Length: 162
Image (tube, rainbow, N blue to C red; front, top):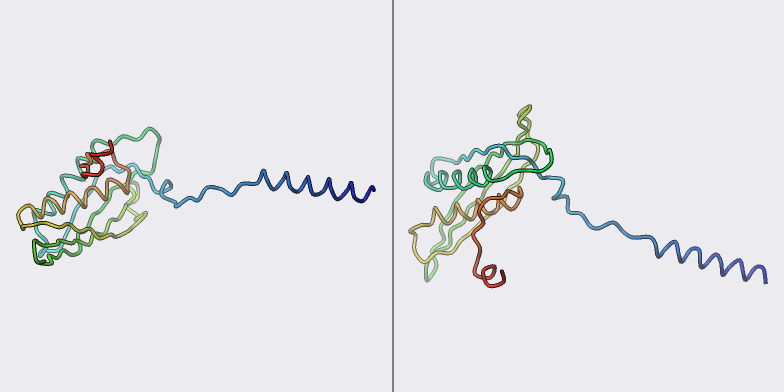
């Protein structure tokens, strides 16, 4: 009898302790990588369109100037390097792609803190306005990754559901 009571109480105790156990929420580490971005610098090789570099610099700079952080974060400057661009002609229009590398550099000592690269692509019916559209796409990705408060231009889907 005593043994049976002991087993039941042990099972209840273990059961209660297991029900109170919760796995921590899966964190992808993005919240740890938020910085107080103080400025940016956009660079590219000579074969990259100068208007793409200038437009990207203006859009990212505008996003940085409109961002304010309520808490103290590591102060950084981001270095944006447009590594490669390409235009792929299609039956109707063309697809434009760019490979971009972004590096966060500490303001205090100039040491790199983080680095990453990404690709963006757009589809256009003509080649007019390709640099501006590509710069907008690059800036939107940087604004999203660094959680800046820059102007975000919505898509048709976001316009329908807001």
